[in-house]
Image (cartoon, rainbow, N blue to C red; front, side, top):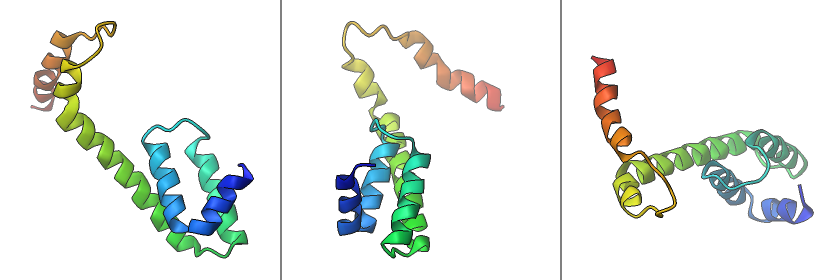
Length: 107
């Protein structure tokens, strides 16, 4: 990881860890989450961050990112489909049949 990222994490601590993991969960391209978590473990050991707080911060950031993506796509999917670019070929009829098919599989 670049030194600038290490300085950012050391300066801002748990808030920086939360934001970096949240951005990774939201799809920011970069290193895999496993590599980032190993890096945070190293930083917490060398900079004396409390490792249980690091673990709680990472867990909360991961959950927040997952919930944010779920809410965005659950409530905004019809808005996104209505405003999709013309070059994107989505099978709208198949997408609209999915809830009925899922409910049929449950019952």
